[in-house]
Image (cartoon, rainbow, N blue to C red):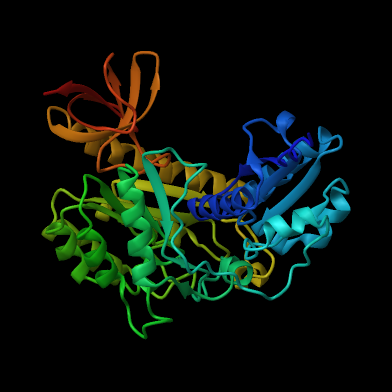
Length: 434
C-alpha cells in the first residue's frame, strides 16, 4: 500500500506589532488550509518563516538577528522572509543573508502556499493585499485573546513614519466582515477582542466616505457573550467625540483610550495641536472618570529644542496619561524627517528619554496606588506555579501593567473579581474574592 504523502511542516516567528501578528495568523491559516502542518520548534520544520518588522532601528536589528539565527541552523530547510523589513530592503537582505530562499513583502499573504510549493521567489510588486473575509481561526495568539484588524495601511503623512510607503494607503474592512469575524471568535470562547489599525479614527473614510468607527463599535457591542472589546490607535485629529459616550454606555467596550499623540508641539505633521489634545483628554475624564488613557511619545525629533522638550514634560504633568510608551526618534530613510537638519544627538535623546520615563513612572505609581482596596474584574492570562498573571480593564496585553495573584484554583482565560492589595509603578497585586 502506498504511504500517504508527508505533510510539509513549518515554523513561524512573528516580530513587531499586533498588526504584524494578525498578518502571521493569515499566513499560518493560508498554509494550514493548503495542507501544511505547523510545528513549535524550528528543528521539526521543513520551512522556516520570519515575519519581520522594519519600523525603527531596534526592530530592524531584531528582525535581522532572528533571520541570521535561523539561517545559521537551516540545513536543508527552506528559509522564507516576509513582512515590513523585506518590503523595504529586499535586495539588501538577499545580499546580506544569501541563505534566504524566498522573500515576500508586507502585502502578499494570499499566495504564500503556492510560492513555497513552487519553490520560487515571489517578487515584491505594487499589489496591495486586503483580506475581505472573516478570519475565524487563530494559531499564534492566546486562546482567550484575539487581535482583529479593522483596516490596513495608512494615508497620514506623519514626518517620521514609513508605514504608508510599506503598507500602502488606508484600506478599511467592511463592518459586516469584522462583525462576522468577532461573532465567530466570541462563540469559540475568546474573552478579549482587540481592535487594531494604523489609525482607528480614520476607519471608513475610504469605503464609506465618512468616519464609521462609531457605527462599527455600536454593531460589535450588540454581539452577545461575556467578553471585552479594547480599541487601539485612535489618532487625535479625527477622534470622534461621540465614541466617549458610546463607551460610557456600552456593555463590552472598555473605557481604554489609546491615543498616540507623539509630541505636544507641532513638530511631526500630525494634524493636531496641544489645545486639541487637552480638549479630548479632559472630555474623556469628564464623561468617564474611571477611564484609562494610554499614549505614545517620540523624543529627539530633528529640530526638537529645549523648549519643545519642556512642552513634552508639561504634557505629562498636565494631562497625566495613565499608560505611556516613550521612544527615542529613529532616523528612517524615505521619511520627511530623514532630510531635516538639526538632528538631536544620541546623548541628548537618551537624557531626555530618561527624564520623561521618570515622570511617567511617578504618574503610573499614583494611579496604581489609587486602585489599592478596590475590586476589579480581571482576566487571567497565564500561570507560573501558584502565581497567576492577570489584567484589569486598565491594561492591554503585553504592553501595560499586570495584576499578580497568588492562588491555586484559577483558570487561564477566565474572568474573576479581585481586590487590589498592593501596587508598584508598573504592577498591581490582588486577591480573588467571591
